[in-house]
Image (cartoon, rainbow, N blue to C red; front, top):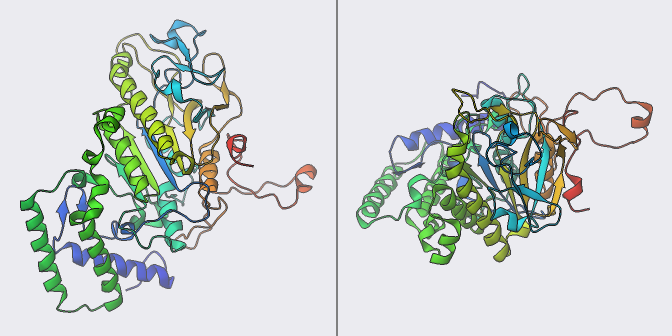
Length: 465
């Protein structure tokens, strides 16, 4: 049966592929935590390898879900009035002369030479869902095209280039949980969504191993009856075997942080965020190309001061530990690390009831940190005014950031993506080209990447020449 979304032959095969995995899932072969063999969502992720010929080989995105305050993290304003600074008005020096961050990040201050602060981010969107979509996809919402996340694009491009052979781990993963507020895969379809390890991080006991091995044997017996779609089911068998290896074989060790020495575990800290950052580093070592570490709790409309007493030490320790560990292992040069949320928080600190010291959503100006993978450290890109209310120098859009990351991963930001209806779709979405001025016309051959506002283009200031 042809796929109703598209008449192209390859998409029809893909629909058949999805249905074949639906059949496998009904056998209830492997169910452990978030892992289920069955359904296309897992299938293409069981073979992963870094992209060839790229400056960067992997991305770890530390996503502070809910939106952290830029004043209380990477863009402090100690000279602003107290109703803007809130209780933590002090800026502390870092190990790079002239760069200061908020006093709540003392450990991160020791590693400013490794990261650049992006203080000019802006998208003027204050809704969680839309802002998350923009930061995760590097795309401005428009009707008709729901774009995939960066992780999904990277997984697709690796598959397209034949780079997903030979490894048993997904190229795109989320830990400790997926975000859930946007469609990760957009028009690429569910086969490219992120994989969440779930119970794989826990050691398997003997009784559970025996139970799963029995289910594996039963499925082998069922498969002996033959398949009506031989080629499709041969691939299904391949992925099932890879899943068996991920659950029951040595590949599962990638998820077991208990194998790390005590000094390393202490460096990250025994918190959900710290453990997730350590797991992300292990996954990079095992060839996973894009890992999102989702840290919850940053939607601080109320009582931000109390909540930051818990959030900020965990963030500071996990972020600084990840940079330290990657650098010591020689992985930071090929691993991009980003840290930020879907937007910032309102610069003015709300002390009146019912907020009792909180900040609302704020997309007009906010900050991220970016390190590794070829990006220069010890820099600041962008600037906000004295109250952090607006960007006054070097505006950065979500698509400026995503295009820069794609470039260092060896993915052409102008490259095409397959839309099921045959629409023109690009890795970094284009806009309608305006009628060129005489000056613009003189710049023959210049590509139209990204969109016109608010960004000013890729982060060439901190990228290799």
